[in-house]
Amino acid sequence: MTQAEILMSQALKLAENGLLSSAPNPAIGCVIVKDGRVIGEGFTQPPGGNHAEIQALNAAVAHGHDVRGATVYVTLEPCSHFGRTPPCADALVRAGVAKVVAAMQDPNPLVAGQGLARLQAAGIETESGVLAEQARELNIGFFSRMQRGKPWVRLKVAASLDGKTALRNGQSQWITSQAARDDGHMWRARAGAILTGIGTVKEDDPQLTVRAIQLARQPLRVIVDSKLSISPDAKILSGGGTLIFTAIVDAEKQALLQDRGTEVVVLPNAQGKVDLPQVMLELGKRQINELHVEAGAKLNASLIREACVDELLVYLAPAILGDGRGMFELPALESLQDKFSLKFHQVMQVGEDLRILARF
Ligand code: AOF
Ligand code: ZN
Image (cartoon, rainbow, N blue to C red; front, side, top):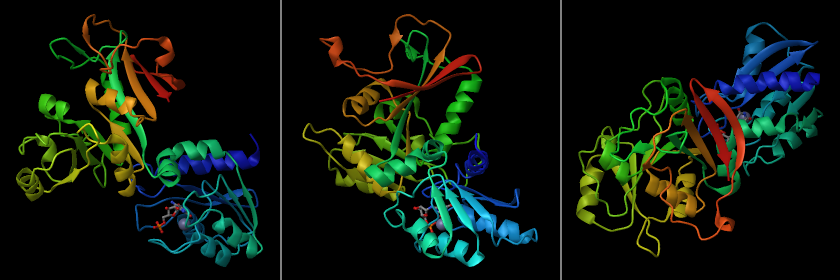
């Protein structure tokens, strides 16, 4: 690794500290270096709080360092716009730093190169593209929303080695080990929203909240319920902050649910089901970067058939269940040419189980 890559890795590590709290803002890290020494570090604070660069500048000054002439390593181009906070590029110019190295450009159309341009115009040397791939991965949901207008959709399933998520009789607790379930909870926690179907709500009555990890805000809970048949007493509706997508208009039921703090959005497709691609765009409008899907085999299959899934997060236990429920309730294919092809992005062992990230 080059010196720049080592320092950018350090900035990426810092960025991870913001993964559970920065959304809808990306989690960014920043390291300020002078005379070969790190004099300031920072990462993105919750929305409305400081960006990574400001945190790092403040930290350097607080420790009595002079940032003039320093080099700044940051995992995203410094912003140039007034959002909830003023532009970081201006703060860096005022601070008199000599050089800014960014991992990549900000895809936000409000910035998109203008941050780097502003630094250059002020005579600051700039460089972009150091560990860009890692930087993109860390905020894959933010990039998805900025570039496609919809969240990065990660669908989680836990199954036996023979691909079964439950026995015929529905028993499924537990197929994977505690370590795998804790790991699954981490992915839930970093998502802006968690999506499930009415089948799962009726069968399991889940809360779909994050409890094991301390969070400043819970992910939005989203339910696909074509016939709006949810019971107003379902646990998932408690505490509000739930969004239902349905395909029918039922003013009375809608009013009842809305009284309980649940939002209902009617979004039918031509078949009278919920229009899933539109759901994704709607969630994008609501600034959801990462969508975590925990649903049954039916909704899982619909999401895959309608090209709404970007990545599968599969936990595989070293067990064989025999006849049971599958991951996806898809019709039989006529030809292998029609198969859904994915690429293994990452495979690792978590506790006793395998964790596979596979991308479409
Ligand atoms: C940076 N450093 O650490 C982050 C940036 O509403 P605001 O002011 O918080 O601005 C949000 C936008 O700023 C966000 O959409 C993205 O373009 C950029 N995020 N920029 O210079 C940071 N997190
Ligand atoms: Zn900024």
